[in-house]
Length: 84
Image 1 (tube, rainbow, N blue to C red):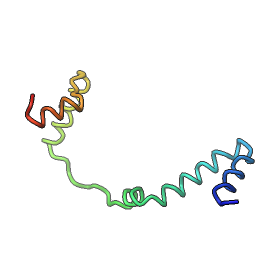
Image 2 (cartoon, helix red, strand yellow):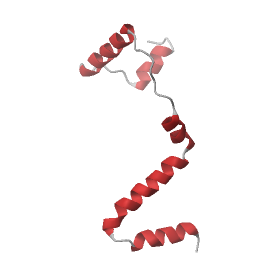
Image 3 (cartoon, rainbow, N blue to C red):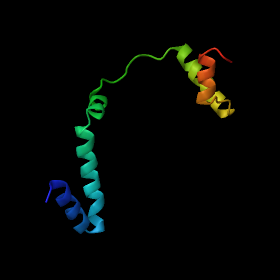
């Protein structure tokens, strides 16, 4: 029997009350084996100051979203190609 098959068998025999603990543990193992997640978790804290201009642009974007003035991806691609 392969290890994967044995693990499935063991999980299938566990009582429901134990499944959340197994899920937590498997998620923990998975997140620590993913190199991208590892890089993100080990990345330094972003401490660069946000400029007034950046804050203004973020506020403008939030207001556009609130007014439902959002462009579809296709509209954005057309604008970037200069066809609109």
